Image (cartoon, rainbow, N blue to C red):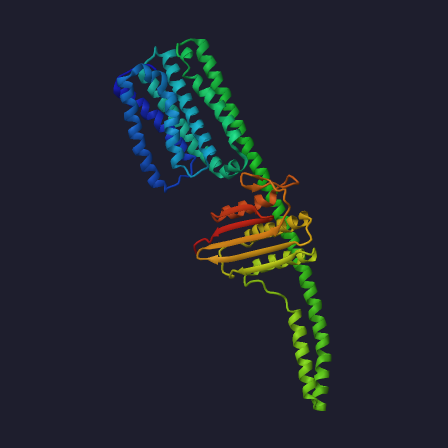
Length: 432
């Protein structure tokens, strides 16, 4: 800290606070509308700047020691409360913002002390230049990459990994304010620079690692979804071939039925004719293809997998009430229903029970689609972050489901209730 009047401290605090808040907001998906969030940020920023400047004026020694470090929890709690992201992702972004603030402070103070004899206006100017460069880079490049990959980060990151990153970043940032390093020397400056550089390199590398892992899992899920689509097409073609064979047989039999009916009429055997027609009507009713619902995509998917389940001796009950004109893509129906049904079949098969059942309920309630699947399952099912863990280690089916549901701002819930695995999905129908 190079000293200065109350107004100089006010200007420094404005630069520091503006850097941290603006950086966080650029990478955030807030709870409220962006306009409302910006006004709340401005109000908090004014209070923060004035409060910390009064601290500088009234208790300068404690301000020099603790102001920078204390700004992290103060601003961090505020930003986390307004963020719509999960907690550990907000912590990571806040730590990264504090790290960049530390870099700007380090550059400002040491450039001023090295070349300009501690000129406080040089310090402020360098901090401002760092602020402009950091925020411009964040807006032009980092923001697009981060927000485009934030779902991958949420999928791959857990609290342990974020705490590890948080410690590494905070360690580097805090070293810039360590009391023994505040005395100016070439050694202290080089040491602080190396620590900040290594901390920044580590977090940047790990950030890209998480994004790469998330993309790899996403592409794997897309590959499995395409394979599922291909299987559905093959099974639909098989159903069509069987339907054609059945139609040909019916046409062939119709000629014999016509001749027999004509013979009954010619002989005047009306009672025998009536009995024959009743018998024929019952036979036709048995041959009718079961129409599950009026939505063609849903009907096709459920028909194929219901047939597959029944061929394995699994009892299937379906109550489906969805219309055709829903603003949900067919490929998303496949990602959700095919994977849910496929997982239910696997769950029944792995249960080892004699009685295996699958119950599916799908209905529209207002602007929402409710999907519930209950199936027989084994007792040994583990969960991680609320999602069932695959015994084979893949888990791409559940990943495909959650990704498709997220497209409609929906919710998923997986649980085991009295030996029954329950999948509940809620989709929000997009506005026309």
